[in-house]
Amino acid sequence: EKGGYDHFMLKEIYEQPDAIRDTYRGRLLVKEGIIRMAGIDDNIEKFINADRIIIVACGTSWHAGLVAEYIFEDIARIPVEVEYASEFRYRNPVITKKDVVIAISQSGETADTLAAIKLAKANGAFVFGVCNVVGSTIARETHAGAYTHAGPEIGVASTKAFTTQITLLTLIALKLAKVKGEISNSDYRYHLQELELIPEKVAKALKSEDHIKMIAEKYKNAKNFLYLGRGYNFPVALEGALKLKEISYIHAEGYPAAEMKHGPIALIDENMPVVVIATKKGHYEKVVSNIEEIKARQGKIIGIVTEGDENVKSLADYVIEVPESLESLSPLLTTIPLQLLSYHIAVMLNRNVDQPRNLAKSVTVE
Ligand code: F6R
Image (tube, rainbow, N blue to C red):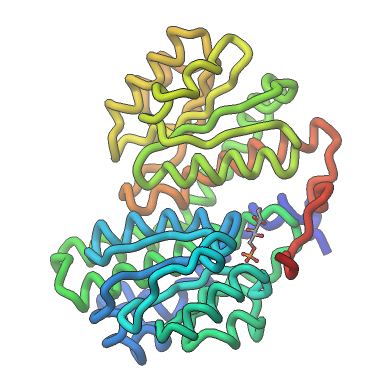
């Protein structure tokens, strides 16, 4: 049932090219220049007239929501707020009929997300679900929705659910950008073409596994890790840290790279591995100067870089390459090495990778 893999998590990491393709299949029509999604088409007025989009989710799904915030605001020019469902539901939040709420949940059963949906509905908002499990409670409780087609995710640590959520939310953002006239035809077409290429680029990123294993061996005994990223890759840093924490039990923090100097820089010494997402597009020079600051304090640098990068390579202890893509699509690629790094560290530490202690696959209690 693990298809020859040692763990479900590894199998699911390797399923991502297919899972992403399955998620855009029938929706992303590159030749025609169309994105077809019934749940959006049928409710297009609600999305276009929305004052803002509020995304509610927990854990990894919340990280996918943060990536979506960047793309919705960047290309569709719709204001977005991303909320932890557990905070949102108890905050007496301001919700109106002009709000569209997007609830993201792999399982479709997360208690806090479900409660946030009920609150939003009671206040007249239109609620759209992004779920993986067909027929799940959240899928049924929302006004409309779209499924990620990741297939069953068994490993407790979410992997393919995350990348397919981002894929789906990217389709929605592109569609709304087009309908609202916020994106030029050529830019739109370019995005569609690049999105279609993501599965093969993910497959290429997976080829770094042996190299990543070697890096895991070097740092598996570290007590703390710091993950840094900027822009679209800031949420990827959060997700990378969460993956490491939950399956290896090593403390890790994700931070926006530029915030490092406002505190976390005090932690950096020769025992601190810092994973820095430093792909070519998006604040590259600024991230490089953050890397120089880490190096000056003897921190160990693992750079996630664009193929062929020489600059970061000359500064970092190790680099892991991912194929080039649009900045907005780069989280789909930069996430891959971070999944593999935490997986291999956890395996080397003899952790129960698929069933980490204290965690459940779906959190149906608050
Ligand atoms: C992390 C993880 C959790 C879930 C969170 C939300 O790997 O699996 O953080 O992402 O419990 O679950 P769903 O998406 O099912 O609502």
